[in-house]
Image 1 (cartoon, protein in one colour):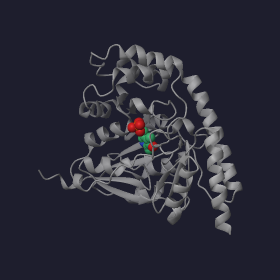
Image 2 (image 1 turned 45 degrees about the vertical axis):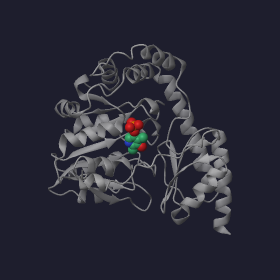
Image 3 (image 1 turned 90 degrees about the vertical axis):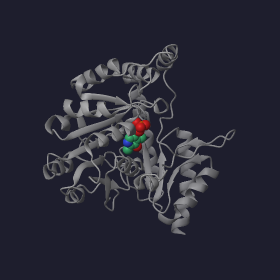
Length: 355
Ligand SMILES: *Cc1c(COP(=O)(O)O)cnc(C)c1O
């Protein structure tokens, strides 16, 4: 059976490296939260496992209502899915037809070109600026009559900078209101730049905005697959209509609800990661590295041709990082012991560079 050409040509999604079985290494390759679930979340997971013979609540009612309450939106505006990557796929399936264009930043999240092609649409990549930020004026200029969606990754994975309110306002003014602007805020909880807007507030002012968020990063539930969209009710209903029935497991729903109830504790952990990010960036800059800003739980080392060699060196030192061959290395912020190991490798490389 021949595959659809768009599927036959899909780039592979490259997962972050894992330590070989039996070996130990710090895994800084997938932007995961280094902390295990809180005891209260673990016990919610264990309790929920006892109901595994039943289908989950198809509409994740309690989770949806808890999120709506926190975000001050209607429950009809919230759609949960199996990770925000899956929700993005549903958004694209709901609005894109064959051959429609999706404008996206590049280098950005590697799931984007895959999700766009699977939806039958055409990715239109727009290069980042020299300082690894989204080039929103260029993205606005790339919009044509075929454009249905503009993807805005803020903070941008893998480079780190976030979009500021004035830049976003200019983009939203320039883009026709029948083009959907997707704000992917997977790392929102790590943002500390006061000029970076809250997507849900932007959504209140602009009908053509949808916000994607996730429990995978700040809330530390990457393994349970739960994320969500916030949108106008009509679009939310469309996203719900194309989603896999019963996608979000009962275990994931209960864990997410318990995590929202423990948000203060979990966000205190995020404060610690943000502090560690500050220490890592400062030490790297002291070593002579020129790095973009990071508002997320990772930093970007623009190593160009030396990317793969650096990643191999880091692995030998016990730190797994995410290389993007020929471009750079993304390093997640994890345990401070891991930061120290990494800083030994970067110090060595910084020395070589100036030698
Ligand atoms: C990690 C990440 C997500 C979230 O993925 P999940 O499917 O929710 O685990 C979404 N967008 C970006 C840019 C990410 O880096």
